[in-house]
Length: 326
Image 1 (cartoon, rainbow, N blue to C red):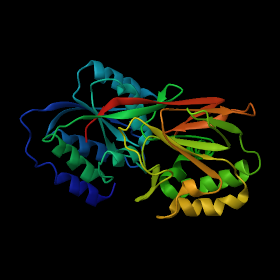
Image 2 (tube, helix red, strand yellow):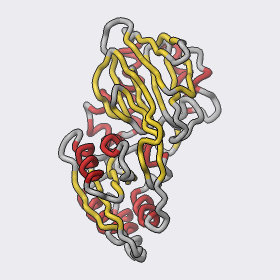
Image 3 (cartoon, rainbow, N blue to C red):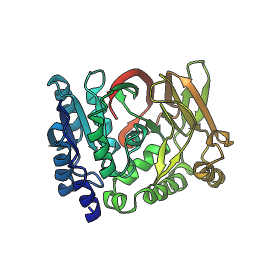
Image 4 (tube, helix red, strand yellow):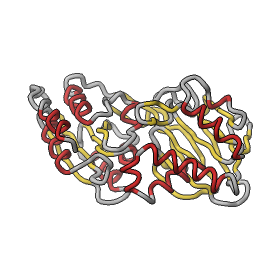
């Protein structure tokens, strides 16, 4: 961690402590992209100025979910997920339906949910933000989408999006070193080498009886879908974290000729992805079912975590299922 970041953290310690010190559990993913041991200690020390802090490192996949379920039963006032979007996802699954609010600190490369909550993507600014939240404590409820019973906080992909996540996760060093550029390269490679030649076949069924045949789909509960560095990437515009609705896009074809124009729409500030000739968008639904039509399993990811292959994915929305504070 750069020395200037550590020095800036020292400047937030002088904030006066509030009269009420809330119990805070910080769940730290020690393997997250930007989390170091020294940074962890400095962040915890800073937050102790205004909270009664307990910090625990995750030890394995699913550990954050277990810790959050325990925190909900032990009366913590807030849980902080300090890691990437995968850590946040596990924490949200552990706190779903409880009265313990979730917040987060950016420890990954993208930190989509952090940004959606309005928390700065810089760790020093985010720490100071949480210190000031102690004086303006206003938890609110947001929706939690879920797929096959697994909650997610902002987006889930079935098809090429999940294939990219699986590829990237096989090379954590390149993921850490190259960040968004490695995701981009992996997406192009997956499209050209896998989805152009032999894409999975799927059918996306909407509540009104409409079905869309395709090779890939992404389901969201809000916009944007993700960020490329500081630039938001929009697939389908609109929606908020608490409107009770799902929205998304279906890629109907993976012919090589569509890739250049699709990429252009993804990075353009004006062109809309849903107006691409190979894309169908949907909005304002509470359930979406995606089924394999060729019998093959289709890769599935939630919030940037690959969770396996499925032949059916049932997406639903759990309105106001998660309490957050930010």
